Length: 94
Image (tube, rainbow, N blue to C red; front, side, top):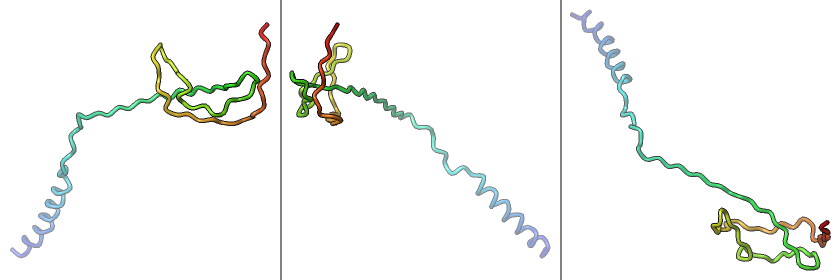
């Protein structure tokens, strides 16, 4: 009987160990909630000059209107980038 108990212990221990690892710890079911986000950013570069050809630098988003398919769009980003402040020469249309 002593032989049976010493041989049975490792076998039982092995079976219990395998059964613990074989259990799936509650797989999370797929969620029905889906979040899709899309965004479109359209950049419009403009240069505004006065009658003398000088670049106007103190404009604000309120000074502009942007339309897409006849619908006015909100201006969400606005910045002035100075590259060269020399007057822009007027081109003659031929």
